[in-house]
Length: 211
Ligand code: B1M
Image 1 (cartoon, rainbow, N blue to C red):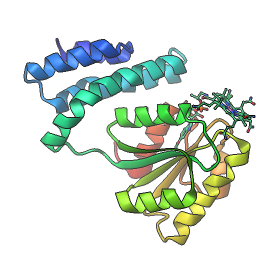
Image 2: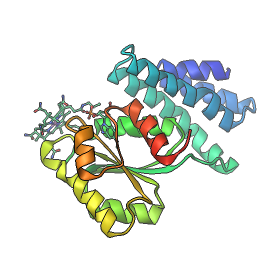
Image 3: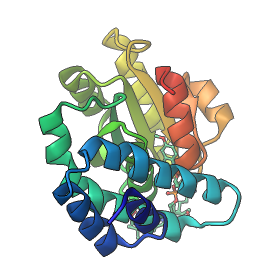
């Protein structure tokens, strides 16, 4: 049992080992915050780096994210107890009319891996629902995913609805998904665009001014 073995378990996508090593570390009085900040988050950071360098691919990133989630399931209650602050609250969802969620889930897991609290709204979410939830939950960022060219306008609707509610600026919007481009993001007034899950983490940090 060591932080190194938890790091390795997450990096290699070994969820059973991530769980058992996390349990063992807690039993040995390792603070939950150290397990998160010195093992899990750096391991996911390395996964993101290897993905960007073409040395890991989407399935491996998903498997690592699941291992991270396995450790997080055990750590979450301890972290809440210890009052560990998240680095920001993000709403994530797939826009109205769109049921694709694999990429959205991957982005969510990478954001959680980086220390954000992510409220997953699921798929087929209306502009009104995004804005209402952002207000209720005091979210700093809304992450919108779309995989269909026919549902991309749902992103603009959400930004317009946010602006009508007087919240755009206070709540930032990041968009992504296979048909989305930086040009489209600029055209609809999104605050940020990310082409993949690991750059989504970088963009979210940049938009929220956290390192
Ligand atoms: Co659909 N589908 N699908 N589909 N499907 C596509 C998207 C399509 C390109 C396939 C094709 O024709 N070649 C096509 C869209 C064409 C278009 O609009 N131009 C298509 C279609 C047409 C459809 C239906 C209309 C088919 C039909 O019924 N006739 C239908 C629509 C249903 C609906 O949504 N209303 C449909 C249904 C489905 C399934 C349900 C069968 C299934 C979805 C299952 C699920 O998600 N739970 C499905 C799938 C699996 C696909 C493909 C094959 C794979 C998508 C995927 O998961 N990719 C897809 C073809 C393709 O993309 N090659 C296709 C892997 C995933 C990790 O990547 O989602 O791009 P991606 O996410 C990436 C980045 O985009 C980015 O990071 C992720 C990780 O790197 N990213 C973000 C994503 N969201 C982000 C948010 C961010 C930042 C980055 O910030 C907030």
